[in-house]
Length: 265
Image (cartoon, rainbow, N blue to C red; front, side, top):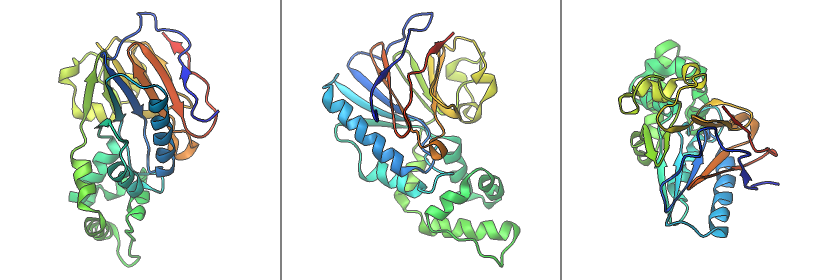
């Protein structure tokens, strides 16, 4: 059933970590230009919070990658800015796609790379159109100028104010992950935004349970040291929310029916 809360099947071997008392966190995975799914999920989150009057504070944590790939990057940012859930605090993290968009605003040379992994969809959502007569760097410089003219200033500010990480209780929230063997307070920004296999495959205790997106899974990937909630929303239609409250953890989904993920060692 759409929007049903699904408890995790069993606790991790080292015992359940906890969010600080008086808080409930709704953590949303990579959106990638799917404003339609985000609107659905926010409605379900609002209903969940109303049905379970809460702790002292409800917080939405966005794990980044608001833009690219899906067709509604502009609409995603519009929705977050124009229709926030009442009485919810928000934490908005920077994703590698968001960072690349920011870089493109100042440097057209990033254009071909950005285009190769979904940037064209973001340009189209803002009304930017490539001119056939232009080639190479001139083509991307023209599109950069168009984007600067068409992107609302508040969207630029939104991107510029995204943060790299946040902590709450026994959890660390980042976009991609952390570098194994490096203390949390010494992590490189590039790793927080881009790391994949070294982090995903590590059995190491990172000092906090890392909640992340970036690496897509068919369903949330729950390990004792990390929880991955990128379910490839732009293609699958499944945008995932992890709910944390005390030692409890649950999931909400849009789209296709999902089963509760098992914990893995």
